[in-house]
Length: 112
Image (cartoon, rainbow, N blue to C red; front, side, top):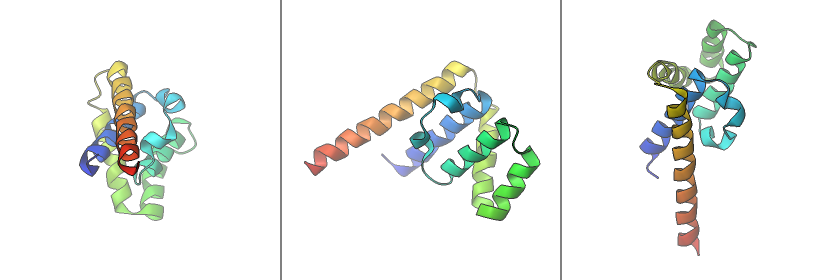
């Protein structure tokens, strides 16, 4: 899969999860396993669990990981505002999971 598509799908998945935090419980970690997305997911989980406030999330992200991670977090939050409904978010999760499965099958075929 092209890395731009991969990044875009992780952004969509996280945006939907941010709007509908209950999806954090049902969405596998590996769907947002690439950096900075994995770290952004962990930060959002902490935010939604009340372990840190939004200012703390941004400040901690900037100090520990740098501006690129803050930019990724901002992108998720900005995109979350355009998530039309929970069903859309669930569809993005399902589509990305299917894409990863297809990529895995393709790579397995090449290796054989």
